[in-house]
Length: 224
Image 1 (cartoon, rainbow, N blue to C red):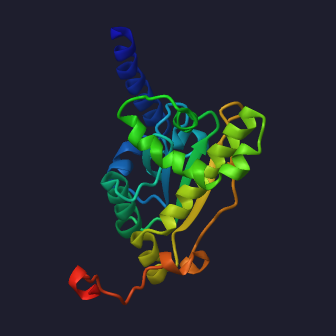
Image 2: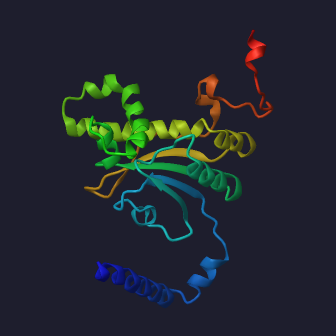
Image 3: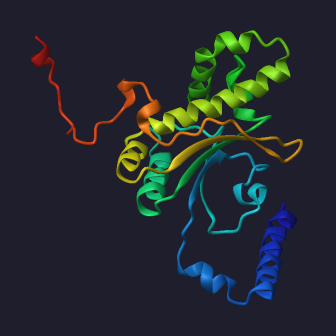
């Protein structure tokens, strides 16, 4: 265990040295500010780090990761990251990136109890329920699993578009564009699911947020 811990520190020093040899001002420039144009909402799986699989550098991508790359509207962590990325950093793109072989998605296909994570997996189970007819028609379990991963990403893209953070930015700036990707662990390649959204026009009216409306408290008494 100690050797792994030490290897991390040694790896850091090696990485720093390599960066400085290539560019003596690398860390001075990195420390000045960050100007990423992309927010990445990905899976916490250790095999899908955003920068490495896209060939980008520190500072290029603002990253939020959780189990199975979910967009949960009550998740204050995700919402805080989204708000900062969209309204402070003014990113131009938000990418939801899943991956084939995702353990969270696979667990959601089971009826087994896993503990507190069951509450998180329920969101993914809802995705299955929405697409049960298509998924149940796929008899090959591996192909069904792969399609479930894709559908989960698609639903998270749609859930992002339903947030007031995204819709207000669309109304003010006409960006960010939202995209859905899936990475293959077997090839390392990214599959674009072609579900890009850039305005609320494609949303059902019930999900559209009016920029001119003010929050109202509607009492029960008013309905009587």
